[in-house]
Length: 297
Image (tube, rainbow, N blue to C red; front, side):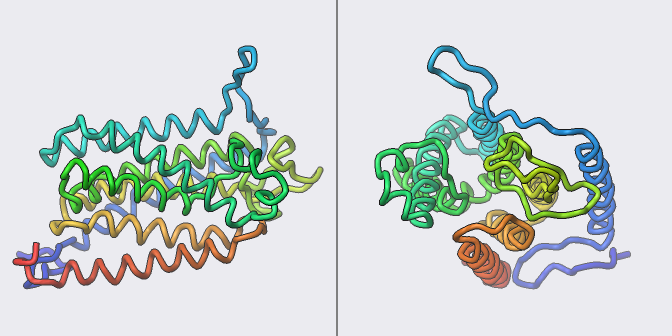
């Protein structure tokens, strides 16, 4: 007897049963309930910001930098596992990770300076080389270009690398947003929700007595959920490029929605347009990939 659900397209797409969606939905609801409990606890306990962990002479370990490093390590670990699974040489992960780190940092800084051109005009040297001021989409574009160049040089299959990178990007971004939370920046608008909290030592600090939405945790949680959804869909999506496109769709929708509750800042509308455009274009390409004849690859 056939399981009720989605029948596989005649041209070779993917099949996911109703029971599978129901299991995924149940797991997501349980995880979301735990997340709300954690947020409620954070609201009842004053969460101290830790922008700097410790200093040794002139050398300072920043929380955000540490979480970014952990994000790259976690992403590299996932990518290493994925490369072994699909039969690619895991040693290439090192070069791809270095390219992603370099391109991501340069791209995020360039995007930030384009949005805040007044900072570049007033103090070009300081604004260009400071550790502050990083924009996710600029980092994504810069990292993508650097990784693509590396893939071409190493002659790796682009579609398989893109699909392998999808869960790695999701888990890495979750660590990065946790760094924003510990640093007390990129928080949301003022709110009286049960889990709203103050960032008294944030960057910048919230006003005394004003609680805001912890949008950093929203994004971190969403990225973890995206990671698990991708791992769930991984054996079910048979076409090349599919997993990478699903990640772009989900990440774009997540970023578009969270911008509605983020603290107002310059370039916010641009971020939403980029996020929505990414999701829509990825969705269109995903449908094309699923519907094209199997002989096209």
